[in-house]
Length: 253
Image (tube, rainbow, N blue to C red; front, side, top):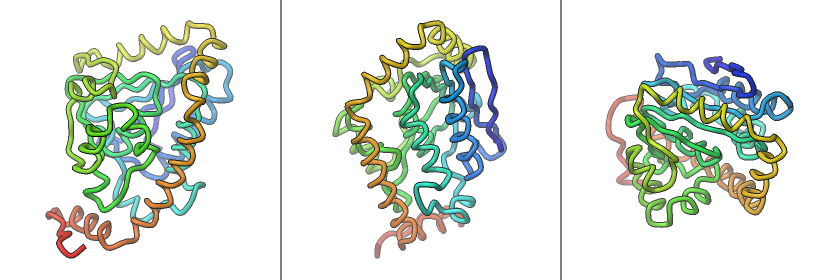
């Protein structure tokens, strides 16, 4: 499935494991991530989830070939199952990001409770460049997190930004050297797992319950627009240009 699931005591580690394709996410990988979170939610021995990639890359986002062959058609599609699972997950989630975190590789972080990045991490949300719109409730959560002007620039231009900039904006909790990231993130996860479970669950619920309904409704609206825009000329031109390794031409769109 290209997603590894490994228990480290009370910590469940979910890792992208498709380095030859820069950890680009397929429908099967989304399904594995969703299943892993659902299982961890019900497993009383799991207290914390850690999501990571490789030292070289977190994830290049959607595998465009697979995405075009298996486009999401509704809330039961693997990608939306994953987004629903991570956005409602009641236990703490920590993310460790090194290298590129493209598209959903950045937006999923907004549903994590702590994000640690290496000095090489590079974030981007190039939805507008692909003729698409934000997803994962990022149109709501990103402005709340970093402010309207910062969010607008990153979502409209879709340009990459560094770990240091992500830290300054508040998307990342801490930036650490590349060779220390995985050990640091696991140590933080293990430390968190030592806290009383009831305290972890209640604290996270209190922090997030005020926005839970709005996140769900925003994700629903984004999903409807995203699926509509996938079939429109701008997205088709963007994907075709990507496959042909040329610049897209949006001059008539």
